[in-house]
Picture 1 (cartoon, rainbow, N blue to C red):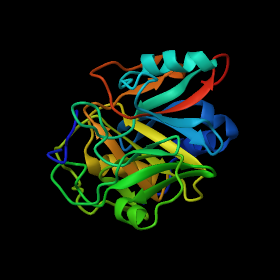
Picture 2 (tube, helix red, strand yellow):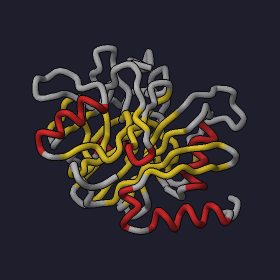
Picture 3 (cartoon, rainbow, N blue to C red):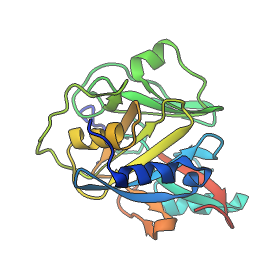
Length: 257
Protein backbone atom coordinates (compact mmCIF):
# COMPACT_ATOMS: atom_id res chain seq x y z
CA UNK A 1 0.00 0.00 0.00
CA UNK A 2 1.28 3.44 -0.78
CA UNK A 3 1.22 5.99 1.98
CA UNK A 4 0.42 8.22 3.84
CA UNK A 5 -0.63 5.59 6.27
CA UNK A 6 -0.48 8.02 9.14
CA UNK A 7 -3.84 8.62 7.49
CA UNK A 8 -1.65 5.60 7.03
CA UNK A 9 9.31 -19.62 24.71
CA UNK A 10 9.49 -22.66 23.82
CA UNK A 11 12.78 -24.44 23.18
CA UNK A 12 13.96 -24.35 19.58
CA UNK A 13 13.16 -27.36 17.50
CA UNK A 14 15.82 -29.28 15.64
CA UNK A 15 14.83 -27.48 12.46
CA UNK A 16 15.24 -24.09 14.14
CA UNK A 17 18.65 -25.07 15.46
CA UNK A 18 19.73 -26.05 11.96
CA UNK A 19 18.34 -22.77 10.64
CA UNK A 20 20.34 -20.70 13.11
CA UNK A 21 23.47 -22.69 12.34
CA UNK A 22 23.09 -21.87 8.67
CA UNK A 23 22.84 -18.19 9.51
CA UNK A 24 25.82 -18.18 11.86
CA UNK A 25 28.54 -18.43 9.21
CA UNK A 26 29.98 -15.71 7.00
CA UNK A 27 28.30 -17.29 4.00
CA UNK A 28 24.90 -16.46 5.51
CA UNK A 29 25.21 -12.94 4.12
CA UNK A 30 25.04 -14.46 0.64
CA UNK A 31 21.84 -16.42 1.21
CA UNK A 32 18.10 -15.96 1.36
CA UNK A 33 16.56 -18.95 3.10
CA UNK A 34 13.04 -20.31 3.38
CA UNK A 35 11.92 -21.09 6.90
CA UNK A 36 8.77 -22.27 8.64
CA UNK A 37 7.79 -21.10 12.13
CA UNK A 38 4.58 -22.11 13.93
CA UNK A 39 3.15 -23.33 10.64
CA UNK A 40 3.85 -20.09 8.78
CA UNK A 41 6.40 -19.74 6.01
CA UNK A 42 8.88 -16.89 5.63
CA UNK A 43 11.90 -15.99 3.55
CA UNK A 44 14.85 -14.53 5.46
CA UNK A 45 17.74 -12.66 3.83
CA UNK A 46 20.67 -11.84 6.07
CA UNK A 47 23.29 -9.10 5.94
CA UNK A 48 26.45 -9.04 8.03
CA UNK A 49 28.33 -5.98 9.26
CA UNK A 50 30.73 -4.99 6.50
CA UNK A 51 28.37 -5.94 3.69
CA UNK A 52 27.57 -3.25 1.15
CA UNK A 53 24.00 -2.67 2.32
CA UNK A 54 22.32 0.48 1.02
CA UNK A 55 19.03 2.33 0.82
CA UNK A 56 17.71 3.42 -2.57
CA UNK A 57 15.04 5.97 -3.43
CA UNK A 58 15.84 8.21 -6.42
CA UNK A 59 18.02 7.72 -9.49
CA UNK A 60 20.67 10.11 -10.84
CA UNK A 61 17.90 12.08 -12.58
CA UNK A 62 16.13 12.68 -9.26
CA UNK A 63 13.14 10.53 -10.19
CA UNK A 64 12.06 7.69 -7.90
CA UNK A 65 13.61 4.37 -8.89
CA UNK A 66 10.56 2.37 -7.84
CA UNK A 67 11.62 -1.12 -8.92
CA UNK A 68 14.37 -3.67 -8.39
CA UNK A 69 15.04 -3.67 -12.14
CA UNK A 70 15.79 0.05 -12.23
CA UNK A 71 18.09 -0.24 -9.23
CA UNK A 72 19.97 -3.06 -10.94
CA UNK A 73 20.27 -0.97 -14.10
CA UNK A 74 21.74 1.89 -12.07
CA UNK A 75 24.15 -0.41 -10.22
CA UNK A 76 25.33 -1.94 -13.48
CA UNK A 77 27.20 1.31 -14.21
CA UNK A 78 29.51 0.47 -11.28
CA UNK A 79 29.79 -3.22 -12.16
CA UNK A 80 27.41 -4.28 -9.40
CA UNK A 81 23.91 -5.62 -8.83
CA UNK A 82 21.48 -6.43 -6.03
CA UNK A 83 22.28 -9.59 -4.11
CA UNK A 84 18.88 -9.24 -2.43
CA UNK A 85 16.49 -6.38 -1.76
CA UNK A 86 13.08 -5.50 -0.35
CA UNK A 87 10.90 -2.45 0.20
CA UNK A 88 12.19 -0.50 3.18
CA UNK A 89 9.54 1.78 4.61
CA UNK A 90 6.23 3.53 4.10
CA UNK A 91 5.76 6.31 1.59
CA UNK A 92 3.41 8.94 0.23
CA UNK A 93 1.63 8.53 -3.15
CA UNK A 94 4.52 10.37 -4.84
CA UNK A 95 6.87 7.85 -3.15
CA UNK A 96 8.41 10.33 -0.71
CA UNK A 97 9.20 8.59 2.61
CA UNK A 98 6.66 9.15 5.37
CA UNK A 99 9.30 9.38 8.10
CA UNK A 100 13.04 9.77 8.47
CA UNK A 101 15.06 8.83 5.43
CA UNK A 102 18.85 9.10 5.21
CA UNK A 103 20.82 7.99 2.17
CA UNK A 104 24.62 8.14 1.96
CA UNK A 105 24.69 10.34 5.06
CA UNK A 106 22.23 12.91 3.65
CA UNK A 107 18.85 13.35 5.37
CA UNK A 108 16.17 13.43 2.69
CA UNK A 109 13.13 13.40 5.00
CA UNK A 110 12.84 14.32 8.72
CA UNK A 111 11.93 12.06 11.61
CA UNK A 112 8.27 11.94 12.73
CA UNK A 113 7.66 11.30 16.44
CA UNK A 114 3.94 12.06 16.83
CA UNK A 115 1.33 9.37 17.26
CA UNK A 116 -1.17 8.96 14.46
CA UNK A 117 -3.57 6.60 12.72
CA UNK A 118 -2.33 3.72 10.61
CA UNK A 119 0.56 1.37 11.19
CA UNK A 120 3.25 4.04 10.95
CA UNK A 121 1.68 6.02 13.79
CA UNK A 122 1.16 2.99 16.07
CA UNK A 123 3.79 3.99 18.61
CA UNK A 124 6.36 2.91 19.39
CA UNK A 125 7.69 2.95 15.86
CA UNK A 126 11.35 2.95 14.96
CA UNK A 127 14.28 3.55 12.65
CA UNK A 128 16.48 1.02 10.90
CA UNK A 129 20.03 2.37 10.83
CA UNK A 130 23.04 1.21 8.82
CA UNK A 131 26.20 2.61 10.39
CA UNK A 132 29.91 2.10 9.99
CA UNK A 133 30.14 -0.81 12.41
CA UNK A 134 26.87 -2.64 11.74
CA UNK A 135 23.15 -2.11 12.17
CA UNK A 136 20.56 -0.92 14.69
CA UNK A 137 16.81 -0.70 15.15
CA UNK A 138 16.09 2.26 17.43
CA UNK A 139 12.75 3.48 18.80
CA UNK A 140 11.95 6.76 17.03
CA UNK A 141 11.77 9.11 20.02
CA UNK A 142 15.00 7.73 21.44
CA UNK A 143 16.55 8.19 18.00
CA UNK A 144 15.37 11.81 17.86
CA UNK A 145 16.79 12.58 21.31
CA UNK A 146 20.20 11.14 20.51
CA UNK A 147 20.59 10.48 16.77
CA UNK A 148 23.21 7.86 15.97
CA UNK A 149 25.54 8.36 13.04
CA UNK A 150 23.72 6.48 10.28
CA UNK A 151 25.05 6.19 6.77
CA UNK A 152 21.57 5.03 5.76
CA UNK A 153 18.36 5.13 7.81
CA UNK A 154 14.67 4.49 7.23
CA UNK A 155 11.85 5.10 9.71
CA UNK A 156 8.81 2.84 9.74
CA UNK A 157 6.32 1.42 12.16
CA UNK A 158 5.26 -0.12 14.29
CA UNK A 159 8.14 -1.72 16.13
CA UNK A 160 7.68 -5.50 16.11
CA UNK A 161 10.01 -6.42 18.96
CA UNK A 162 11.13 -3.91 21.61
CA UNK A 163 13.88 -5.04 24.00
CA UNK A 164 12.74 -8.63 23.56
CA UNK A 165 9.00 -7.94 24.01
CA UNK A 166 6.31 -7.85 21.34
CA UNK A 167 4.63 -4.53 20.61
CA UNK A 168 1.96 -4.09 23.33
CA UNK A 169 -0.86 -3.49 20.85
CA UNK A 170 -0.46 -6.76 18.97
CA UNK A 171 -3.32 -9.21 19.45
CA UNK A 172 -2.74 -12.95 19.40
CA UNK A 173 -5.17 -14.57 16.99
CA UNK A 174 -5.98 -11.29 15.21
CA UNK A 175 -7.74 -11.71 11.87
CA UNK A 176 -5.87 -8.73 10.35
CA UNK A 177 -3.84 -10.76 7.87
CA UNK A 178 -1.38 -9.41 5.31
CA UNK A 179 1.80 -10.42 3.56
CA UNK A 180 4.27 -8.46 5.69
CA UNK A 181 7.96 -7.63 5.73
CA UNK A 182 10.33 -6.31 8.36
CA UNK A 183 13.88 -6.22 9.69
CA UNK A 184 15.42 -7.46 12.93
CA UNK A 185 18.91 -6.80 14.27
CA UNK A 186 21.01 -9.09 16.48
CA UNK A 187 21.93 -8.03 20.01
CA UNK A 188 25.50 -7.24 18.97
CA UNK A 189 24.38 -5.22 15.93
CA UNK A 190 26.42 -7.37 13.56
CA UNK A 191 23.57 -9.11 11.75
CA UNK A 192 20.40 -7.79 10.12
CA UNK A 193 17.65 -10.24 9.15
CA UNK A 194 15.22 -9.09 6.45
CA UNK A 195 12.02 -11.13 6.53
CA UNK A 196 9.00 -11.40 4.26
CA UNK A 197 6.10 -13.71 5.01
CA UNK A 198 5.18 -16.14 2.26
CA UNK A 199 1.49 -15.90 3.08
CA UNK A 200 -0.82 -13.59 5.00
CA UNK A 201 0.06 -13.26 8.68
CA UNK A 202 -1.02 -11.06 11.59
CA UNK A 203 1.26 -8.68 13.46
CA UNK A 204 1.54 -10.87 16.56
CA UNK A 205 2.68 -13.99 14.71
CA UNK A 206 5.01 -12.05 12.42
CA UNK A 207 6.68 -10.38 15.39
CA UNK A 208 6.91 -13.71 17.24
CA UNK A 209 9.00 -15.10 14.41
CA UNK A 210 11.60 -12.38 14.96
CA UNK A 211 11.66 -12.93 18.72
CA UNK A 212 11.43 -16.71 18.87
CA UNK A 213 12.68 -17.83 15.48
CA UNK A 214 15.47 -15.33 14.92
CA UNK A 215 16.01 -14.39 18.58
CA UNK A 216 16.53 -10.72 17.90
CA UNK A 217 15.82 -8.15 20.65
CA UNK A 218 14.73 -5.38 18.27
CA UNK A 219 12.69 -5.65 15.08
CA UNK A 220 10.83 -3.16 12.90
CA UNK A 221 7.86 -3.52 10.56
CA UNK A 222 8.57 -2.24 7.06
CA UNK A 223 5.18 -2.67 5.37
CA UNK A 224 2.39 -4.93 4.21
CA UNK A 225 0.45 -5.32 0.96
CA UNK A 226 3.31 -3.76 -1.05
CA UNK A 227 5.81 -6.14 0.57
CA UNK A 228 8.15 -7.39 -2.13
CA UNK A 229 11.40 -9.31 -2.32
CA UNK A 230 14.22 -9.55 -4.83
CA UNK A 231 16.19 -12.75 -4.21
CA UNK A 232 17.99 -13.98 -7.34
CA UNK A 233 19.38 -16.95 -5.41
CA UNK A 234 15.80 -18.17 -4.98
CA UNK A 235 14.80 -17.27 -8.54
CA UNK A 236 12.48 -14.58 -7.20
CA UNK A 237 11.97 -10.92 -8.06
CA UNK A 238 8.53 -9.58 -7.16
CA UNK A 239 6.68 -7.10 -9.34
CA UNK A 240 3.92 -4.62 -8.56
CA UNK A 241 3.20 -0.93 -8.14
CA UNK A 242 6.27 1.33 -7.92
CA UNK A 243 7.94 1.31 -4.50
CA UNK A 244 9.35 4.07 -2.33
CA UNK A 245 12.48 3.30 -0.26
CA UNK A 246 14.25 0.02 -0.98
CA UNK A 247 17.02 -1.66 1.03
CA UNK A 248 19.44 -3.88 -0.81
CA UNK A 249 22.72 -5.69 -0.48
CA UNK A 250 25.04 -4.75 -3.33
CA UNK A 251 27.41 -7.35 -4.80
CA UNK A 252 29.73 -7.44 -7.81
CA UNK A 253 28.08 -8.52 -11.04
CA UNK A 254 30.08 -11.76 -11.01
CA UNK A 255 29.65 -12.54 -7.30
CA UNK A 256 27.25 -12.85 -4.36
CA UNK A 257 23.77 -14.28 -4.26
